[in-house]
Length: 287
Image 1 (cartoon, one colour):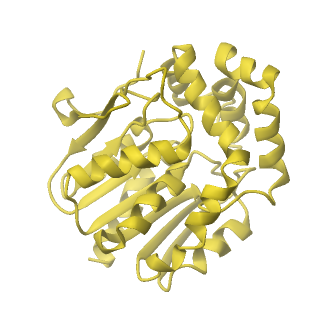
Image 2 (cartoon, helix red, strand yellow):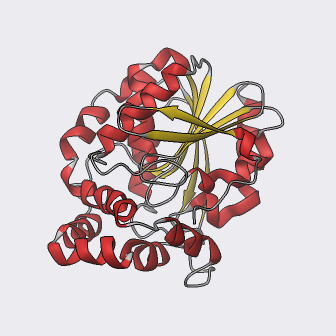
Image 3 (cartoon, helix red, strand yellow):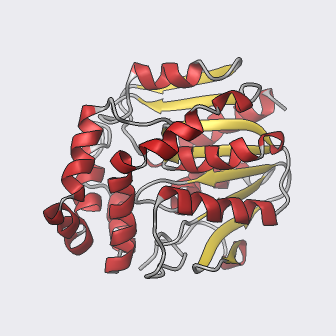
């Protein structure tokens, strides 16, 4: 059963693509904020900041194909560049300007792919334990991706939902239960083998999409004038490193930064309602 967002069904819209129906939340009025999730989450990841921000901003949060409320078509590749193409089509159809992108995990490369092609439409970036460069020099990430890409690893993810049951708990902060309710909700949403395949494709892509990521990173100067907010879980074993923050700091002239020592990878879930006021303050200070 797909977990619902804390908004009425009237705020869920559908964008019909050639690959399948892509669902997205569209709630509130005002300057647009686009929220892009990672693996194996959905727009549900952003329910707390959406609740805090939608009274004054238009909040748009798609579910990629295979995740959340969207379709999980068997013929889709589920590679990150394919997701990025569909997200770009959705956002272009909405004719957005003065956009703030809120990016987590694979939402970073997917969102940056759009921003680099349409830099004039982007005003601000909110970055949450994400990246947009090849991860070839991260032994832990490479080893995990390589293991999950093996035939036994693929069976573990696609048949037994191993990513949600084991990888998600292993990357959360030390203050949480081993498997809090929100992890169980995402595990339950991966309720078909095709949805778990979408999760597996993202895990495999950590190692196999280096060329695409390198292409994004070499064009990063196009976004140098954007204002950026970094909210970082420092207890993330994959990305809670000083080197990740430094990479982003070197891209932007002006940025605001918050570090959370006991928060792991899934920052919007682990921070809960505390994230919304930080984002709202940043938006107001850069209005």
